[in-house]
Image 1 (cartoon, rainbow, N blue to C red):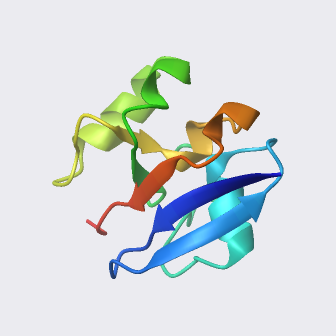
Image 2 (cartoon, rainbow, N blue to C red):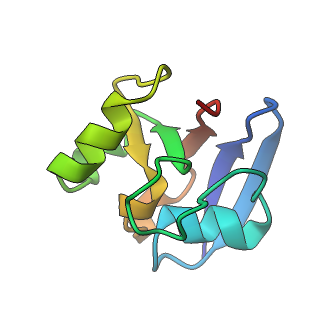
Length: 105
């Protein structure tokens, strides 16, 4: 098990315990943070799972794809650590990582 420190859109922190498999989007959704989150179900087509990741995990991620980059470019809230949670594969390296769900566009 790993623990993720996830801050929801209202600024409330959540400690999400999950297995280090699947995607970050699935872990957040399965925990129950679904209000307007991950509307396309993980198909990299809507950007509603936009998150801002802790700098410590960024080097562990695969590069941003052209599709993901285009969707993130449409956000008024894009930051250096912005990713789509559906494109982030969870591993044990994510233990204690901080994740902030970006404001809705």
